[in-house]
View 1 (cartoon, rainbow, N blue to C red):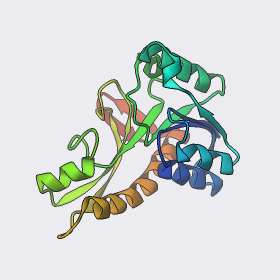
View 2: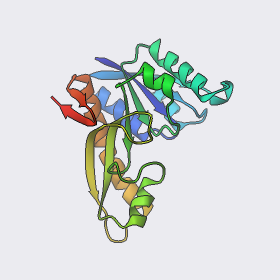
View 3: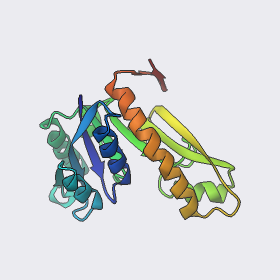
Length: 200
């Protein structure tokens, strides 16, 4: 059973998917702490309702981003977290976190990476006119949305799709593949070879 820490900035729907998967036994692990950079993040309340420790770590209390990341890493380390999951966390992680949890941080992004990195990925996809969108679970590295890809799911773009309608269908796939990726990690089945993640 691995100990999971989740970082959130907002509503935490992917956090809920992970909590539900752990409760249902679909992940050999449990979420032991949820940390947010926003005091009013709904994800913190989701954590409390699930009986999980919820922490607001205020970035304004630290002089630099590295200092904040060092505090974040310490918060997770003292709780013996083995895997860090980003669930709508809106800050780029810096070296203190990336070094402390090298190969142990995952993110889910609402696009088929390497296309449409960063914010508003669904809008980017619609504006570009792609026929297939989707989502990606990847390991986190220094570059934004650049880490090795673990799992992806494709979502057709329908005629008349809006950003909201496409986002809703992509989110359903995020909720499916994120727990799957976490379970593969918990089972020790993921191996990185350069950019390629092999599933054993």
